[in-house]
Length: 408
Length: 76
Image (cartoon, rainbow over all chains, first blue to last red; front, side):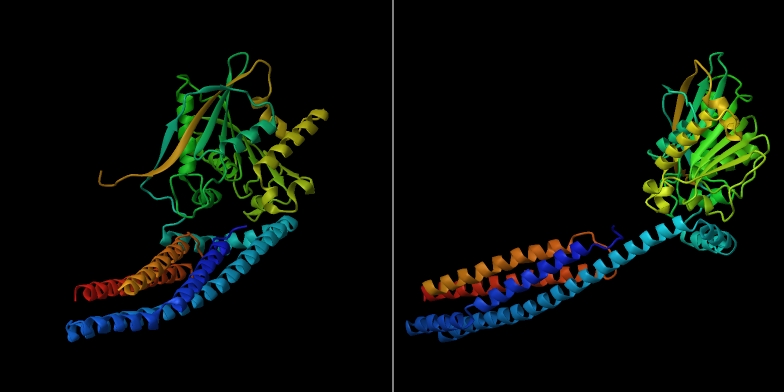
């Protein structure tokens, strides 16, 4: 793995320096210094004997001698400099390689540790929420990081609505979340229309796409992560709200009674629960369910009228970053799964992958089909995934965080 | 005089070799590697490149003097 240093490049530079030192040494060693001065002196003397001006001869020969001696001295000094620097770069390349190996090993170790000790991650995150989050945000704001600037606006780039396959189960819903994460800023609002012409809405929200602490154009970033987990507004949340608003308005009818399901993986799940919990977002809308995969949502509250389905892999550290266990009971259903060790390789990062959550969601779905009892999570997703003769229209929006010029 | 011109050519040839080697050193300074001390190393590589170019210029200077001497011998 690469951690920012490039031992190979440094080693290549070291070789270039040592080759240069060898070449200069060869040149300096083969310079005809003495011969040049002797021949110059002899040629000048010959000219003087032939009648040329002796003072001019003396000056010309002296110039040659001076230049020759200077070139030889500079060459020797430069050869030494090049050789010294070449040796230093070789040592530096070795240090870089050691750093790279060390950091790589440490990160792999941490990845395995968080997978093997989820409770410790949860405990550590609990303390971190109390003592570290505010100072971290304070430090970030001084650097212009992790802050939603007040002059930021979210711009929507709307695509033409297109026919899409309607979701048929939990697996399709999670797959949609993973799919939108592949494109910067993408939000997909899918209108599912049943045989009788009644519509329901599914909003697929992406996980974190940009890992820079400095807020940039992509609103699905670390800044959105820290704001969403603290139930604060973010450019991403506003963008999702605007996308749903525009998609529903485009139908030209009153959609306020049509059920809405918000779904998301990782950050997308936090945003989904945060929006569903926000009375301003629910105003004039009927949000009935939320599906999350690998999201820390335990600190958020939802009205009892909204059902929540949370998928968590036991070795995934991300759902534990809020420092509290996933909720159970009432409108909350947290399904904790143990993916096969071969799929995670014992790594927390693999356990968090969207593709693995899609597979788990499909397995949960397959199990429920074999069991006649209706689980509570099935009641949440069924209105959006079941029924004959359904069709779906996908409304896609690309969100961009932009900044207003206060003087314009 | 022929010997002077032959020597001048030898100094010019070494100047060419130095310039070629300087080009390789300059290339080594270009890669976008990061890490502790990387900026300083890049600066030093550029300094070595400049020194090699200056050394090549010095060799050209010797060759120029030798050609000047050859011309003076010929005319006197």
